Image 1 (spheres, helix red, strand yellow):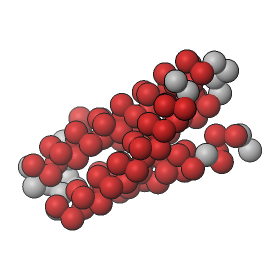
Image 2 (cartoon, rainbow, N blue to C red):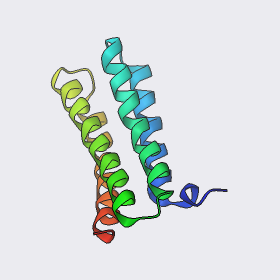
Image 3 (tube, helix red, strand yellow):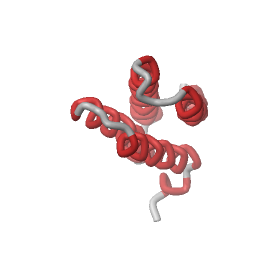
Image 4 (spheres, one colour):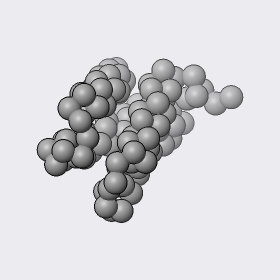
Length: 114
């Protein structure tokens, strides 16, 4: 087993990605939106994994910062979907809670590496 697989933030990122993919299956989305949402949520996972392999604090911080940026990208997509009434307010709030938790965990990792 790789060390990053034990990280809580990695597990939360995988869970968030699964929720994002479930949303894209439940809602009819234009292909570019579906693709972008899926890629952004997947990017969170990949950046956490790749960042954990880096030796320098600066390199790890950069990858974790990119992962957090992808969380924000997902939130922006959720905002648009909610504004356009493609997802319910309840579903929107649940997704935002997951994103917020993930963002806070990544922020803590980033600050610890500063």
